[in-house]
Length: 252
Ligand SMILES: C[S@@+](CC[C@H](N)C(=O)[O-])C[C@H]1O[C@@H](n2cnc3c(N)ncnc32)[C@H](O)[C@@H]1O
Image (cartoon, rainbow, N blue to C red; front, side):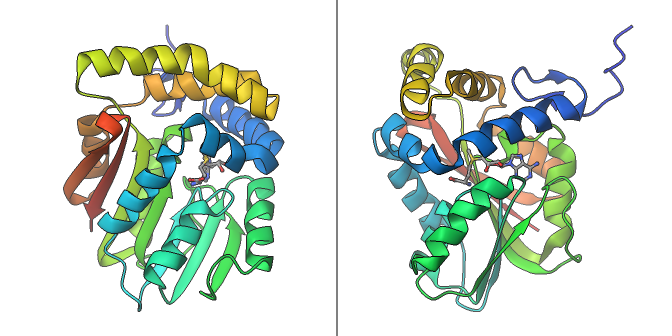
């Protein structure tokens, strides 16, 4: 009998039912090791496209100057920096599971990289958010949900801490609808991402995981359905670079 059948947690590398610890421990190992090289890898591996995707995310994010923003899986603070520069909200709460990633974000703060927008940092597992119900206007999350073994719980937690009328803005790798582009991208994921990642960070295994997790992740429609199951409504998405990445916007 498959003892994991009753679990709603998955192994994020395969999408198959598995105890949460498998994915949580792996993600912790990877991101605590590569924290200081993470931004360099992002820039090189996507040939700079990640900047266009972040720009698209900012254009879709309905953030007002009076808003309190919660950045989930905020890592080294990249999304929080773009939010600060683009929207100048009242306050940003930048959170992540891995303290080493947030240490890099704090270095950016010391350098004045958040344009004077008030920001706080907190170690937070998105599947168990330690904040009060209805306390944020906007949640941002880039490349976070794919790494979480209990996605339903994480999205429910985000729904809970959002104020009514608030929005979740989520940037994630996705599935190119065009079969030729999809095949090329699949080749890139399987062969080139581990090569680049190994070269830049020295952690080839971490990038084998990255490629696998992208391939096992639901497509645009599948992610929208997960958001709707958590209670969100009017979920829309926009593809970038032919669907390699997508920005979903979901409302409470
Ligand atoms: C690919 S990085 C993205 C970081 C940042 N959002 C960016 O765009 O550069 C993925 C991040 O998700 C974080 N993460 C993974 N699982 C998490 C969880 N359960 N709760 C919060 N953060 C998590 C990792 O620690 C890592 O910093």
